[in-house]
Image 1 (cartoon, rainbow, N blue to C red):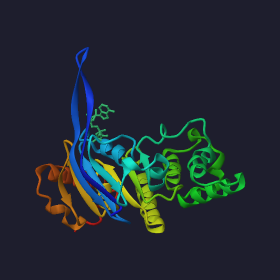
Image 2 (image 1 turned 60 degrees about the horizontal axis):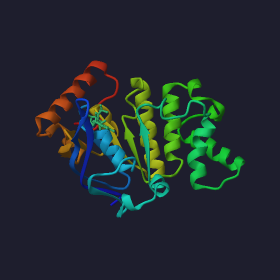
Image 3 (image 1 turned 135 degrees about the vertical axis):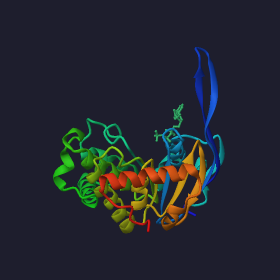
Image 4 (image 1 turned 90 degrees about the vertical axis):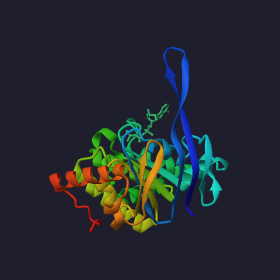
Length: 267
Ligand SMILES: Nc1ncnc2c1ncn2[C@@H]1O[C@H](COP(=O)(O)OP(=O)(O)OP(=O)(O)O)[C@@H](O)[C@H]1O
């Protein structure tokens, strides 16, 4: 199994008044599996703990209990460089996830240099190749983040995420800040990269429409727990939990209103 999460818990300390601190459990015993080449959607309301789970998966934070294994190895036993080679992340806030003083070539050189000893010429060649993969021309190589549109900058973030040839990418609300038409373009790009590079995705969102567009399976996340799992997108209409039905209904209403991109795999 590419990724296996078993009974994972995570809490944070929350201030109560001026002095006291109390531990609040955010992730409350989550288990999931991600297969090779699969896109697993995680949907849930704001504050349900989706991003916390995402940070645990890529090793940005440590679990309190339970374990996370990538290809059968507990991530607590992997060094951070090795972990970065296996898993990348793309966040919602593309502008703060890059250094504003770095040009695109610098942003892309960072992960390349971590894993490969390349000459400057070959690093540039690889960066151009990465830009091509995400649909950006070579001319963008020497631009600064503020000289790019949101969609272009998120493409650069995706190029950075695939630079290490990872096994999977955690996409945490990766399209939520983009205009709807640009969202579709980025989703199409992700689908294409998944095919080309055999990458898996964990697609974290509160937008079920996007999930139906790109995911193979979906987990409904509520209050730190997976409350329902849909293993075939054609079964989405048959969700049992009221919470899942509410999210489904909201997505369909939005879809009808905007008529932008259809819920493709719901028949
Ligand atoms: N480092 C932290 N320290 C303390 N509390 C935190 C920390 N990170 C997250 N939390 C709290 O954990 C809860 C879950 O946050 P999280 O970002 O994981 O939810 P989410 O489902 O991703 O929400 P959203 O969809 O709004 O991003 C929130 O109440 C948040 O305030």
